[in-house]
View: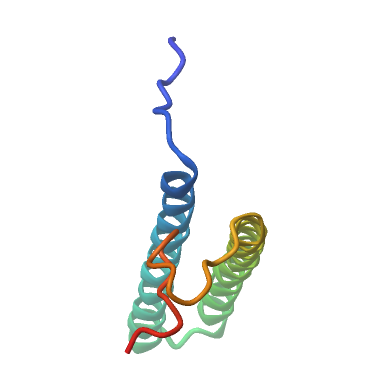
Length: 111
């Protein structure tokens, strides 16, 4: 099996890729949560057996624990991106008033 080809990216493209990956994972987790909610509704409408409801509860608990862990990892990932952006901004300070737009920053005296 051959190695995957990883396209070259500059810093900005890499940051965008990371942020997009976080957003996609968040969307996937939202879909999982929604599916769990639908599952709970269907099962509770049809089942009155306490044993089956306990099984449902354990299943939902495991899914929620997985989602919470994933959310924590995504939060750490996002915080690292923010830290990296702040470090990069320190290395590339904003231009002063009257020096135009540089590095995506808007002059202070723009109205």
